[in-house]
Image (cartoon, rainbow, N blue to C red; front, side, top):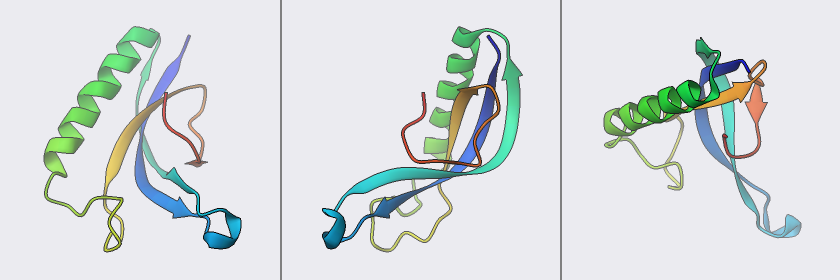
Length: 91
């Protein structure tokens, strides 16, 4: 099966107290990185990219901080075309 590895800028949305005070992770598509035809290879590439991103972003403000204004990224792998936004965790 074909998997596409893509970069997303991540953020957290808040539903407010009137909606039960929920939080959820979101991502906005930045760019596609690679196409993999083996699911295991795609997951290895995703883990490797996210380890590198964590090292590069370790001094940036965490997403959970009230001072976060963007600039943190995450690699996600999707079978088929990557969505423009995602409301849940990556595979």
